[in-house]
Image (cartoon, rainbow, N blue to C red; front, side):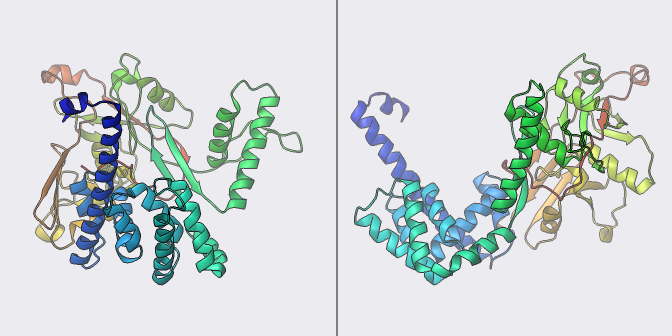
Length: 433
């Protein structure tokens, strides 16, 4: 196919784009019908999205969104689905119609769907203009349900949430979905404090200042601004624990590799050292096996049960099946206690609440080997999906002698970085396996 494309002229290349777009739209329609059918066959099981995610090679959250979109198309927007099948709408355009009509009852949604389809077929606007289609759909919603705007606004406010999304280069994005006036007021406070710092000679950019001020406010830390009384604004709060895994040579600035932040992934060594040397960080020693890098012991300062949980969290870092940090997961018996499994680190592993329940769902099987860091899922159709996590610190080329091991310092340091107490954030939006 690549060699054929290399021989195309400009007109043929544009035609190839048309073929690609129409093929993608039809593939999106096929996926929607297949997802809706699977949901029907599974009698609406909450784990349909998990089964789909494994095969589609997307995250659980992405599969859940696709499933909801598919059900909307099949059950409420049949004309939009037909347009996708005809190659007119891709999933992105269809999602705009779904967003506008999702709060309508099924009958009104189908009414908007039919009217919108007629406008497109009459040539009132191009089907490829997603923004124009969304505006047209919004106007139709107002016509079909003029009294529902207040109800929809209240429902949207009830769905307010906070979401943490891991990014690249040791950065993450924190989303706050808030009522408009609350968000505007919060931004005005952040902007006011940032501009105050800027006017007082702070050399950071306004964007940097806004981000730093917002973080300081959330962490109950001083923002550096002054109150009406002339005092520095400050407050105190209780921090939460996060795990930073770092080899001793990285901690000593001999290397910049091997540092990881639980729930996020690898971060640069210099950034890890900045976190570790933060005055709010608390260091804990973790002893690891020199051959495999698997943690074997952790400095004890709490009762044994908590020590066991902390060692498992340090060893496995995350739920083996998603990106949720292990310290916010359940402690799971790999071999059930009812089957004779002991309560120990060897028979323990972290599972987020979702996958803990999935383990006991009929037709599903979840296995995890903490020694090899290998996780396996078998879905109800018998398909097997395997994932092997990388050790915290790489396996050395040669296993050191016992004499050399006895002279080694603990090779992982885990600072407990002070963070605000918050509800569990969703795992990263990466494929589960």
